Image (cartoon, rainbow, N blue to C red; front, side):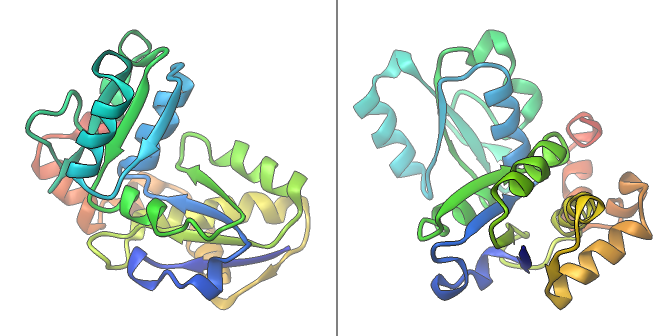
Length: 216
């Protein structure tokens, strides 16, 4: 299995992801929200690039069937039902519902990967399950870090490293230089909380009093 990493949404190219298995990581917080919503029984999650697309989609599907979630600048969007906090996507709120979500980084990344053969979303909540699935598929993988506003993000990168570490525990794989670097970073920083405390996006969320999201 060949494993490569794209460091942010700005670096996604069709020739890199086309017909590949892609894993999108935006652990703070879009892929954590999506994973939590699915875990808590939502019908499905639909990512959209823009707020306007999300509103149109909700109108076409039906107001009672949908929940609008997401953020701009880490804050809840006016008129939306939920923010981008995974703690809001409880079973009582999302079970049986279609979640339409738009975020600054995560859904931009997801909607930029449509040429991929398959797309998975990963975060620290489900990374071991995703690793098991990738091993069962045994196909080349491109891990796409959402990043922060197009820039490299430490939190997504170390989550990638953790997943690569799990994959390499079971077998040897052909890692690109950047995939080797992510694995090395994780192996030398297994206390993820201490590591990501230095990340820009972590500190943005901390400044907005979202420590419970970070702990989750």
